[in-house]
Amino acid sequence: MRERCSLAQRALLEVIEHQRVGPGGLQATRFLLANLFARIERFQGQIDEAFGAQAFLPTAGPTSPANLRRFNRYFEYHRKVSRLLFEAIEVWAFTFTCIMKLDDDWVPIVIFHMHQEAAAKARAGANRAPKRGEDNGNEEEERTSNRALRKGLSEAQAYLLKVINKEQVGPEGLQATQLHLVNLFARIERFKGQTDKAFGGQLFLPNAGGPTNPANVRRFKIYFEYYRKVSRLHLKAIEVWALICSMKLNDDWAPIVALHMHQEAAAKARAEAKRAS
Image (tube, rainbow, N blue to C red; front, side, top):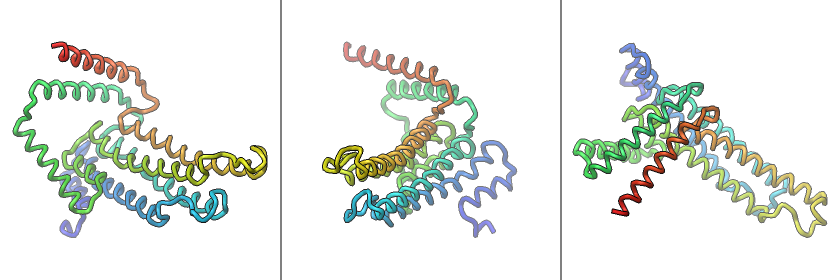
């Protein structure tokens, strides 16, 4: 049976056989989530391919029925897939790979992570030459990434695979989904750019009898509605980006910001002292 199972199924069978609980058991589902992210990326690519990555037909005006249908259908496809992406990122965040729940207080975790990063940078600065073991680790990480890319995986999928192989948890594991959001931000910017281009960046037609003319009222409503839809997706994507940076909107960010400002001030002081010497 094991021979016929996928990698994700074999990981689950291992958990069952060894009766693992806690983080070890939860992480067995990481390959299932990685497969979901790959399918989401494939959906996004196929939607773009079907529409030629163009929200508007160049042969019709942006307020024409044909382009209204085209934009709304194209955007709605992407909006639905993006909602699934956000849900997948939330599940990735609070259970399977990072063991961080959305209703937990993440501030102590983030502060601890920031202290660890600062200490690591200090050690790296004190000893520029990396240890041989660290070299081997970096080489193995690069080989894993290269193998994934050779198998036809995207850069975003290869990043997820790297995190899974290293069994990272906490902020490092959470940040593995950033490339998926970067790709979404690029699509959102393309929607906005194509909308501006279709309307010539003008809310009102100068020769249509003024801004209260029915033609301009209709033009404004349609132009603004296009932007409202895209912007709402953009704002949700930013909120999810904050999440994968371990910053939840309902957390108290003051200690994190204070530590960040302190670390930046210390870094500037060290740089100035180095220049003076």
